[in-house]
Length: 537
Image (cartoon, rainbow, N blue to C red; front, side, top):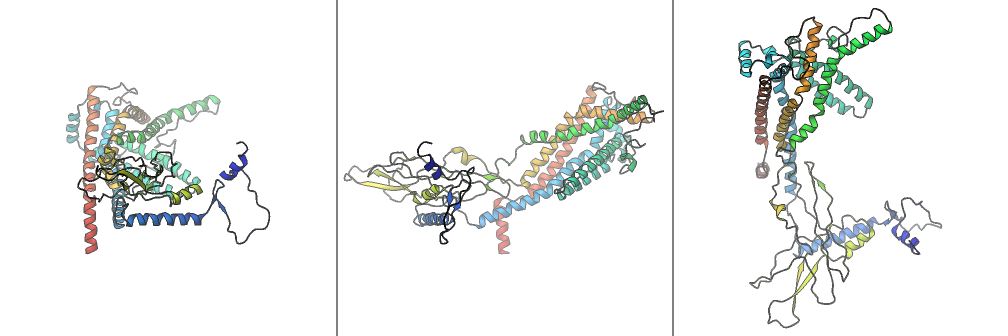
């Protein structure tokens, strides 16, 4: 740092790594306590307050004399009305989001999930055309077998899952209790989902809402994990054989759990993939309308051309959770001797009619008084000139020499990019996002079912064969444990026809919730009319 190193260090302030050195001598009780920021620089809140008052009074004077006008002029009642409007739509959207998800799941619970799983498991479903399956179902139709198989168990599981989610939030500060709750419910939920699968495949009775308690205890007669034969003795060979048999009997259940884990793991990536390709208002939602203040640039040197300085304003969060970033304009002043004109970003053409009245310029208010990064910024906030003078020669050739005209002009022109004003702006709330959320859930679930079909088929066939083998029966009606088993055009048509029917019914659910969202939605004009009617009534 050279000879002036100590002086430079003292001017920059104390480093965070330096120790605080207390001064010696008696303290002056009349001297106020000096405050320092995190960088060791002296700060003075009282001076900062005075600077803010000076800048505020300056802006008020500029507004009164007509030199500057505020941008986005609105009364305080309009932002408050807009906030109430967004809160209203947020509350309605949050109330409707949960029924929308449950309705999409209910379409699969009542018959279609069971039909798809039987197509992937049974051999005859890959040999009979799709319309023949419907004719056979009409001739031998059973509500408990074709519609309600596994539905009550799935509904109970979904309801308990919602209760567990609330309990997880309530015990967030107790990690041990939260971990025990999650692990216990995960064990019970897997067994309940597995029991619903058995009911849909016709391997468990449909007249039972929930399985018996023995179903949740491994190695019991009703458990999906069967116990191997008891070893004749406790020799190592017998114990290893018993452990191997227990592992083999556990494999179907573990394979199905792995398939379900893969299904849930693909939930977020597939949903994000689908949602990004759906038209939505999230990226072009309406930002909060506020007065964009302008910042003050530092005074430029006499020989430097004026440079417009833009200081980003801190983002303001809207009720919808979005942020707004504004790039305010700055103003500066340059001096070149006595009467030389300053260089400006835009030129001014006088009115041909001779009228001296000019349109008002954009706002040139300063926000430097709100918060300063250092003492230098505070000094600049008071000493910097806010208006630049553009002095030009008169156009008239008959004017006497030396006659000049002056005009007040901001140093930076407003943003004139054409794309900024042409982009549409939407009201982005939970209610306006409801249709796209339901559509994204519908299409995402359909895409996951198609991608998971091979894995789900192998797991279901393994489970079905194990249950049939426990009864000592053969399994000719089940497909073999390979993907090519029963693979034919009829199987593909039946599977995709079932998925198309599932997608159509979910589309009807989407249409219902879209209509409900449109019914509750209010435009800005309709909301203002309702507010005025309430105020008058």
